[in-house]
Length: 437
Image (cartoon, rainbow, N blue to C red):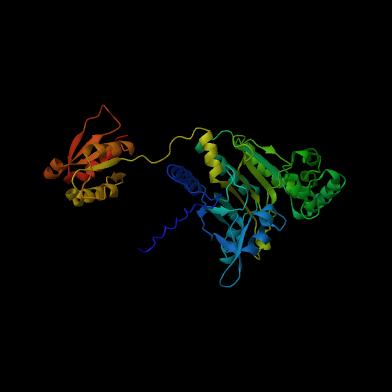
């Protein structure tokens, strides 16, 4: 006898660590948030833009800055197999939006208000609210130089928190001024930190001369007294920069928006100037920033375009939904109107035609499907109908089919009685199913 070979066990494949599947019912929460944002953006006259997930690596090196955590540690970079081009999975979208605006000459007829939704990628240690693939929503106002547009974007984010019922989100503001003002501040920072070099950690020493402003963003608790004593950029701002900031705060105050000026707020990318801001919360532990942004008036030039002012923000969908859940977010999955109970497979052509008509009129309905000639018992089908969450069961039994009818049985209201409808009156049935809460 031929020797039988032991079948090779096939390895089970799993998702990449930190790149997670979003399954129902969580996916319904994502759709709920996206729908709210789309409606909000429409009210503020922001239009959708979709840029590639993969961009050329120099876009992010030039745009974000070489001495940033994202460029130094977190980007997913690889070479194109065909031509060797250096490519990167986008770690953020602002640089890509500006690249698209330059490439397609989008500002030829004036400023543009844009928004985006989609996945970003950063290679970092996965933890709750901070994943290697994460979805962001962002708004970018390109070609506008006034503080009124800075305020508009902040007010738009505030409107979103209000619609979501989030009342514990704080706004922090700062101004990074203009390049020459930052240069004077940079000199003062270097002098300050050099005078206390023995207190600097390894990361701060490495950035001391390349990007000392980022030292202010250090999370090392041992360095906090030194950071708090550092020269404040606000003290180096000229009249124009201060006037821009005062205009912003005046508009926010007129709209009842509370804020705190945080002189240590610098953000993680090099392209910012003037206004920077963050919305934070205490509910998410160390990952307390839920939305952040600012003005980046020089990014167009850095990427080879004509000088154009711009400002924007981005929020992480995972963190915002986690905050909403902690605040008592109710089930946002869309409710099912009806579940079709079918006792005989021979009735399926009529049943499917009826359901198609109902769906075309806005009724959400799930059909029982067995995949065999037997549709299963009435009892088992009603059990599935009940677990589906549907408000009604549509019974297509042999008696109903013979009479050209369907029985509508309430599943959530014990006081309501079942009714029989003619299949000739499906439009009226659709209206009735949607009118009953």
